Amino acid sequence: MKKLISISILFCLISCYNQEKPVDKSKLMGNDYRLFQSTPAWTLAKAVEAGDIKKIKEEVLQKKVWVDYQESRFGQTLLMLAIFNNEYDTAKTLLELGANPNLHTTFKGKTSVIVAADNDDPKYLKLVLAYKGDPNSIENVFSGPKKRINSERNSALTTAIVPSVMGKKNLEKVKLLVEAGADINYTKKGIIQTALAEALIQEQMDIALYLIEKGADYKKPITLFVGGGREDVTVLYLLRSSIIDLDSEQYKKKMELVAFLKSKGLDYEKEPIDEADIERMKNMYPDNWQEYMKRY
Image (cartoon, rainbow, N blue to C red; front, side, top):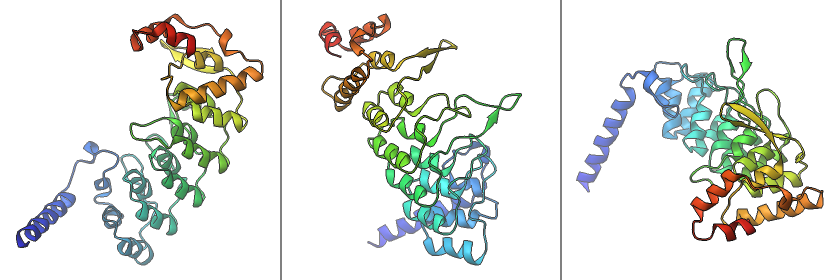
């Protein structure tokens, strides 16, 4: 037991040393609290990383450290790092102390709402929305010689739609944003794709069906960027291009979507199959691709 205690103490001492050792911030990743080294918020940052609620409150309430202090490399706040690093209690504490979930970073212009929309756990998004987070948050960094917004900017809604390796709760996050007032047909300020288009491109059929049920414009052309150019396509085109496992829940939702569109005069069966998609089927289902093509 004494040996284990000694090892634990030694580990803590090494961790504290590494934390305090001066670093080259240009080499740090965005989730590293050492980005706040040598700033007025460094002690607060260490308290956030440690989950020390008492110390966090002391730094903000008594020592008057600015809770929304932004580190210089990416322009992130400690609220963003707490969400990114899955530290729910510290994120909640920072919000209770007045942290602004709508501040933008200086790197891509993300907000804490967008960071929360990117987190696999919907509770972070629910949290920031409860503290006046903007459901229509979009990245706002300008780029280019004429300061035009980059076309690759994301919104909280499109961010919530994109699937991650672990995330299976995208629909729940989308519902949280829509119920909070997110504009499902928004396509301004560098947001090229509507939420419905993003859902179809990402083959998130449950989300696409939900968005249509909520009034998404399914007749609006969808812009794809192919080979350095751009091409406008239809909802039916994207559905035809979605090669999904026939036994999956997403396939069931796709067929519900197909049935809905047919009731509105858009016939999926009449949409031609692209030669490139046929080749994909052959590669994915070499033994029964023709049968798959009849059913998909």
